[in-house]
Length: 420
Ligand code: NDP
Image 1 (cartoon, rainbow, N blue to C red):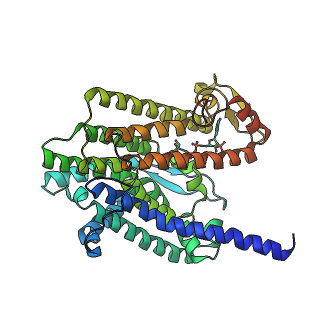
Image 2 (image 1 turned 90 degrees about the vertical axis):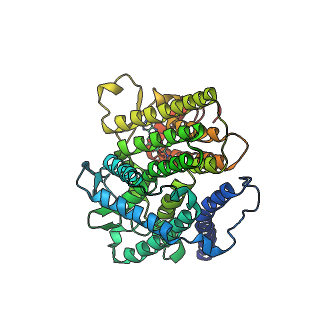
Image 3 (image 1 turned 90 degrees about the horizontal axis):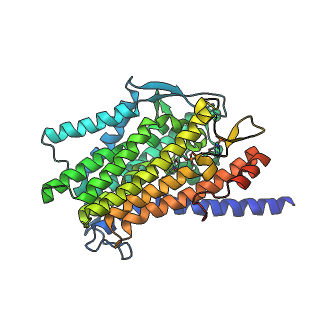
């Protein structure tokens, strides 16, 4: 290939990449905005043009901005408290191993305790569902500002701390991807706090505020809302109990901290993943006790598959010689690591993704089947996990070569038995 051809290919590749980045920068805040506006509309439909507030000024609320900012600062402060355990992360490309404060359980309990104290002191928690749109706008604004500060800060970081995908020299791409891998302020690991705390730990307090609103309006919390609260709190409680697993994820090891992560955690995690609760306040739905029992059973089946399969793989990776894994069949690889070919990982190549998808179905069902808005997270969950599965397959094929092909021959299905 001559140089001009190479250059043309490069330009085309980056033009496509650049356009995609711009689309993502716009879609990241736009999807949650459309979703909240759809829930606010009288018919709750996503398929109609959203009704904007009469004046753009109504989108801004100083108190809402202070709530979002205060929440982020609280999570930073709780992370720094000398509680929990200190763990070392996976060795990075630079050879460094970072230290993390694993005190998510304490942070979650403290956050919930503060909400309970506020309620007992007479503070009106219904501000959260009442100013949901303004809270989202504040989260978008704060996400954009924090990402800009991180972008500026990254220029004082050593070159070894930068991520190649976030260090292309294209301002918008780098702002989106994040230039620095692990920006820190003293002992405060900003990426860990954004990925594990700011978004996910908000679920308990947000649900408490939704329940307070329902009690104020109707005198009791409706069954579908109670069910969804139990599901979401179970999911996040598990996340903080097992938060050391985050240290081995792809995001932890190789993704920079930029607009994608910061805005994603500030907007999608609290406003898209758990939109079903807000939808139910605006559009109450009937649910019978047998229906609730069936949905709860579905959720706990999904949770069991998700939790047990993750525990099996993570436990095996930590200590392959543990007697718990002696009965499982394995294939050895040239890396020294083995692949499980029986148990959960002998049933499917991604049983944990199946569990996650089943739970997402159970989160939407209490909202009935008349509206699309509560199902947006389910659609997103399926899309992202299918995409992750494809990337992971490619990585494992490259890493494990013939052993991976043998694994795929023995375990035929990726996420859904006999379907996919
Ligand atoms: P996984 O936990 O599925 O890990 C994949 C890795 O596991 C592979 O790269 C390989 O790594 C190892 N592995 C694969 N097959 C085997 C086997 N047979 N035996 C032993 N090890 C194997 O990846 P994710 O980080 O994508 O997911 C973690 C969790 O987070 C999942 O439960 C997922 O559902 C959830 N998640 C949810 C999202 C959502 O929006 N709801 C988004 C993203 C993740 P190696 O060999 O190097 O150890």
